[in-house]
Length: 247
Ligand SMILES: Nc1ncnc2c1ncn2[C@@H]1O[C@H](COP(=O)(O)OP(=O)(O)OP(=O)(O)O)[C@@H](O)[C@H]1O
Ligand SMILES: [Mg+2]
Image (cartoon, rainbow, N blue to C red):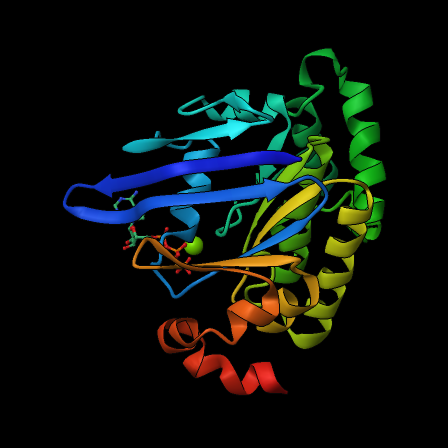
């Protein structure tokens, strides 16, 4: 079953075509990888899906229903959450308070009491390994822990779909391995995932399918084996990363 679908998605910023006629399908229970060079349009695609701004052209469907241009909080209520590439927790609030905001704005948001939101936050923080930091302020966290908090906020929304935008950027090898394990556990909870990542080890280890953007256009999609051996993909993106890949 297709949970999330983009049809002909296009975004222009003035004269710049950031995303051009992109079609994609996210199927229930899978991890779909999205890769491509810096500036390829990956984050822009997520921003169009989650109502940060409407597409210039094209449509987004969630479980068959058109959600094109819906505002972010409505998209969250429907059951789609995302992380931000540049994490922005409320710095003076505790980790627990930050995570509980996710629960309040998520799929069950309207019915959730403050107490229930806090309980949800505690459960999720334990799940992502942030239990020991629960009562610290967000600004005291390292980059790796902030990325984990970002994942926790998205999870606390109890979504059906999460769009992860580079949750491994800036992490060391050990932290990357932990993040990979966490993402597998999230999939095991039954959540469908789009994972944007430059860390090839993670994409290879996680993705059931991959699609590739380059200058806003989809240049390949298919199984990891097909896509990572595709000559256009190697030329446009993987060239520099090939050594890392073949390790
Ligand atoms: N709000 C905006 N206004 C103007 N231009 C933008 C805006 N957001 C993105 N762009 C431009 O659109 C293009 C695609 O950017 P985007 O952030 O989607 O790339 P990306 O694939 O996520 O790159 P990265 O891997 O560096 O995160 C870039 O040329 C970027 O400068
Ligand atoms: Mg980006």
